[in-house]
Image (tube, rainbow, N blue to C red; front, side):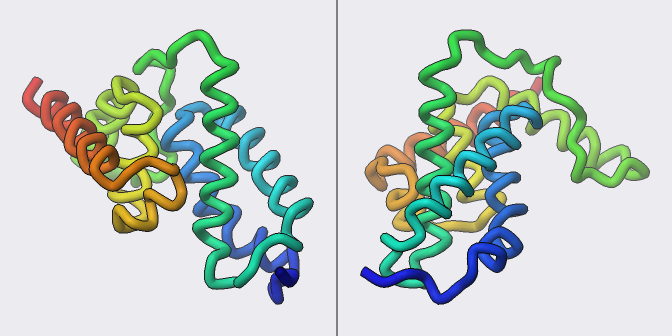
Length: 161
């Protein structure tokens, strides 16, 4: 196993934002997402020597983030209420219809299990296939397909309200 050819600075510059948004869409709370991102990057830095190929970098980093989120959820007893989710920071404030869609999705996401949020985030926002999501989450392809289907149903139910 050899060290990555990318410098840690390049890794952070390339993956910090996608990792943050993946974590944020699952955890929902900005401050907690930042903490998990920092832990993810620290663990990646400490174990960069173990990475076999730069081609596996993205999946490897997302897997570390997934493990850190799992640790976060195990240590957390309360659930996040839909009204505690801030308005999406990525929505253009001038576009009311986009804001409404974002609010509907946020309300549905708040009702999802952590796995459903992970799968939905990775598939919908990051456009990953089930094989890659399986490598990141450690869940079987069938479990992921069911979780994604259930996540979409929750969004559809929110839209129908």
